[in-house]
Amino acid sequence: MANRILIVDDAAFMRMMIRDILSKNGYEVVGEAPDGAQAVEKYKELKPDLTTMDITMPEMDGISALKEIKKLDANAKVIMCSAMGQQAMVIDAIQAGAKDFIVKPFQADRVIEAIKKTLGQ
Image (cartoon, rainbow, N blue to C red; front, side, top):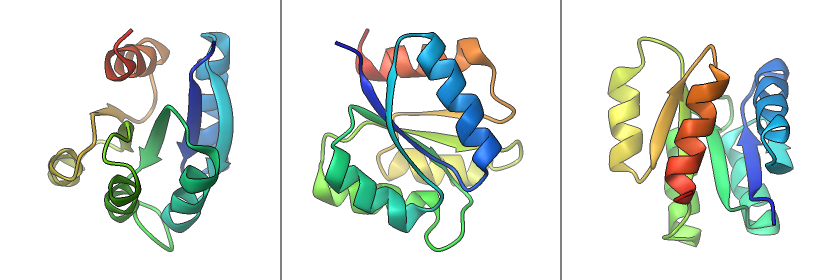
């Protein structure tokens, strides 16, 4: 059975890029959210196997959303997505419970590597 993934990014074309990489590699994208607040709601509703989470977003940033998701599900698997130069935020995200991070612009092999590692495949 395909692993179910939730994609969270405020940029629609970034969500599209990740969705494309995932679906080509046999993963099922079960939902998308444009901000952290919606990410938390979608997580509750969809219970995905893994979530990709942008760090910088309106409404609620990715680190706050990660903390909320971790309160709901201590075993949540979340991979953070960051632009270059956000190292301090990446460290905060890892400390908040993120399993890994991928850097924009996305490289398909790195995205799949992070997902496989996080899902223990």
